[in-house]
Length: 326
Ligand code: UT7
Image (cartoon, rainbow, N blue to C red; front, side):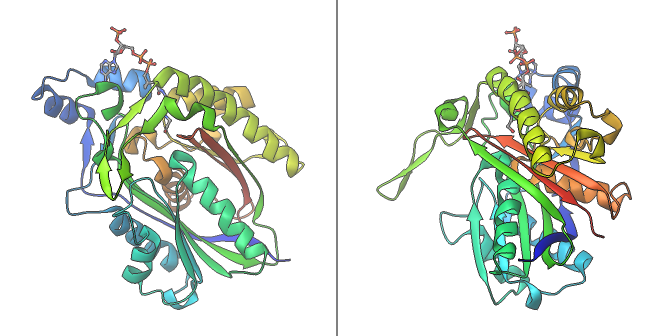
């Protein structure tokens, strides 16, 4: 059975960043009060990108995907699997993955979306690894893409300042040497009510409340707990210890969650990739966006061990441990 390895990455962010001050000014016009100081202190976020109305998840996904293909030295003809993790698809169907296939001119292999909210990319990467290890694909394009700004209640200051739009992508390729060393995926549906967008489709009609609601403190507590336990579990599977992790890339929701997790695992903060300050929480896009940024600025190098982690609505969480082969 072959292994799989990450051979390319790419990312895409729409437009110019919107700073906390700019956002606070826009919200003040609606009577919603917030400040740069509150957002920075409680979350570590300084800015986020917000997609203009004409830009969809599949646009951002295709852009990130094209960059990942270029980085891997591959073309559309090489890709035989596309998985897009998103909770903000362009439409009910076709899947965002099929739209990406069309935009990139990929004409073979399977394409589907995967919905595990902020854990989506880690779920998708694990799924692609299994496809490759089973011999069902050779070159998988795995993408996390979101336009979360579309499902935010802009009158709820407790959530609307936290999220941003963007996409990140990786190419996972069959490999003789191990790249993906292990993964763990978990879900606890009993916590579905602490983070949700409860709009539904009933008899073909969109109904209900299509905006995100969150019990921030409950999510915070659970996130810190499961980020530690899933990290320990995936490391023990691979018989590695936390000091053998070169880079921790957790889901970028809140700098305080990242700090707690790093402290609990005994990983110094200078070995944690942090992008929440620049991107906010981009849900399924956050881990591959952070990975691509750290790879392109030269922090991630061949031979290093990287621990990626997702956590979010569902409640879902997961971890993927990878050795970089290039
Ligand atoms: O990707 C999914 C994962 N999501 C997460 O991981 C989010 C996890 N949760 C969190 O990051 C934090 O719980 C939040 C950042 C959402 C909230 O931080 P907190 O320290 O738990 O604040 P809080 O909800 O307890 O609110 C404290 C105060 C409240 O005012 P009072 O009741 O003390 O007067 C809020 O009304 O802060 C107020 N507040 C704000 N003030 C200014 C809430 N949002 C804002 C805001 N600007 N944007």
